[in-house]
Structures are given as structure tokens and as C-alpha cells.
Image 1 (cartoon, rainbow, N blue to C red):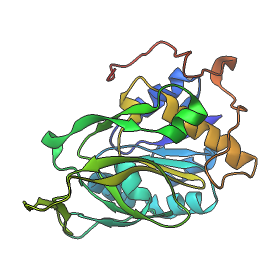
Image 2 (image 1 turned 180 degrees about the vertical axis):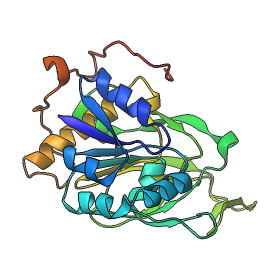
Image 3 (image 1 turned 45 degrees about the vertical axis):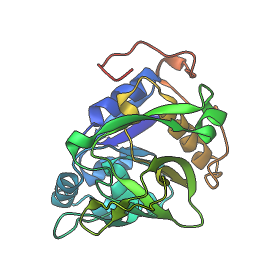
Image 4 (image 1 turned 90 degrees about the horizontal axis):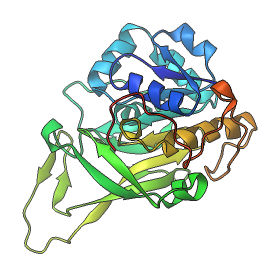
Length: 259
């Protein structure tokens, strides 16, 4: 099993390292013809506008859209989630091209600027049910987006509470003080629709490999023709070195990451 990782900009090395810790080979993808050599793809976090411009320069968008339409598993983290969304708001002037496929609306930089990045414990019952481990996951949000709404075929895997006085506009997220505002609401930060997975946070920057393991099982499901619903499991993962590492069998970490 070989997993492609879009390597235009952003945290592609960290995803490749996370896959390696699970015994799976990740390869860098920069050109359209390289997609023919992989059966799945991770689109990493980074600066989404820069990534979009580079993807356009290398004529990657048609090949990426075809990859998604063929039903091959694709996981977008942070900027990658924006790429996969059918609609994005809060973009820079002129907007950016999207791959699409995920029936959702994403707000770019929903949580603010770089200095407003944060970490938070997220409730992830679906992930824990399939992969084991604790019922929470430490989400690393770096100038992160959020999902504002989803279509009927999209499974919500995690959400996060935000103050109710955070009101959305097309260009930014603006704080409005209201005496009678509700205490909080929730925005969606992880979704799945068939062969597509999206997370607003960065699992590759943690020692917890369950999201990567979840994605690898998605690949097996799609290969067996059971990609819909997001609830099936499969242990038929071919890994480098012949090992299948679960949550309680974490290998040696070879990159500095958040614990």
C-alpha cells in the first residue's frame, strides 16, 4: 500500500512520517501523472491560497477532481479540507480554486490568524469506537478553518464549541458583543463523506496516529466496494515490514511533534 501526499507546500513531511510510524509508505505528489501511481491521497495543511496557486501552475486541479470522482480515498487536513469543500467563504480577494467533492461549506481561517492558533481536546466517539484509545483527541488548530454546514450524506465526526457572538461574514470572523447572546454554539471540525475525509486540525502534528489509521482502513473499505457510510472497518492493511500497528503499539517517533 502506497499513500500519495500532495507536496506543494505545508506539512506533507509530517504526514509521510506519521504514515511511516504505521509502517506505510507515503510518496510526494507534485505533478498530475504521479497520481496514477497511488490509490489514495492526503492533502496536507498549509497556506491554502499558495497551495491553490501552485496546484494551478502545475495543472493539478483537473487530475485531482478526477481522482476524487473515481472514488479513491482522499483526506484533507486544514488547508486540504478547504480544497475538498464544494464551497468556501472568507477567502482572500479573488478567491481560490477548489477541488470539491465534500458537500459542505468551509470558512477559511474561521478561528482567526496565526497568533490565535490553539490546541483543544475534541470528543471523537466514532474514531475511538473504530480505532480504540481515549474518547478524545488533541486537536492542533493552526489558523484553522471550520465547516459551517454539511449536506445529508456527510457524517460529522467531531465538532468544537465557540462563543455565540462569533458572527460570520464573507471576508472574516467578527466578534460582536451582545448582552443576551447564547453561551456557545458548535462548529464542525471533522467530516466524512464516502471516500472523502476532512479535518480542520492537524493530526500529523501529534503522537496519536488514530486518524491516519482510520484513513488507511477507509482505503481498505473503498477497495472492497464498501466506502459509503464511514462506519465499516477492515484490518486488511498491507504495511511495510509486515506489521499492523494499533493504538497501543505505537512505534518510535522520528520527528519532533506535539505530545
